[in-house]
Length: 167
Image (cartoon, rainbow, N blue to C red; front, side, top):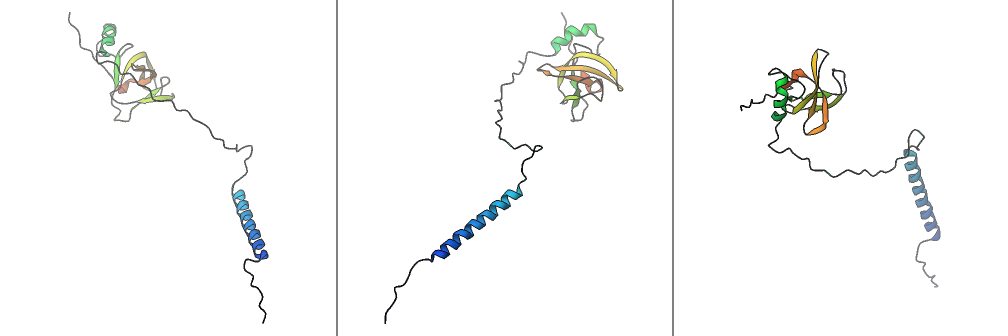
């Protein structure tokens, strides 16, 4: 009895079928991925990456404790009756219930809001008075930041009284 040598290994057609099947699966996955994303149009620009540079924080100087707004008020006080808000006086924001006071670009309730100041914040009066929309408006500027300037209704301002000096 003659025996044939046994063949070990994988048949070449099996290898060819496996390669073909793997290529078909990869092609289908690629098509599904490609069809799931819409192509960019003129209305939809192609997203690009951008580098945003954020400046490092800087030290904000605080005024020395010897600087008090009362010194400026003392020079303006002789021009105004006592207890009167006027240009050159200092006022603080009060009565907002913690909601803050809207500082506007110009007098009036329809004017653009520049920022919101909080209760107890102190401002120098630099303009006004202007009567509009049932309020008396004053232009205010923060002594620590000239960019914090805006118009505010007198109803939410309290005049900072200064102690009278005796010679």
